[in-house]
Image (tube, rainbow, N blue to C red):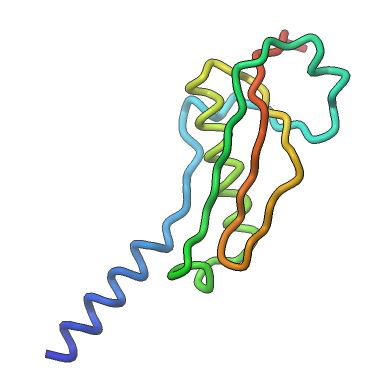
Length: 110
């Protein structure tokens, strides 16, 4: 009986370790950090928030994987909004997760 319990617990933990992949909609979305001058030429599409990591899986994933997953999530959301650029705010780090906020824009092609 204990074996079944441990197998179930391990399965639960491993499923919780999956991070967000970059989807087709998000691939063309560019990420900017301090380019506010360029943003004046763009059409705002909205503010978006993404987070990765939970109390039960944060110790299985490194910060780089969590950060990449958050950026993928932001780009996926922006792509669905019809945006091609996101402008990031400073990331918010917590003990168990990474959260980022960004503005999504539709910018003229360079």
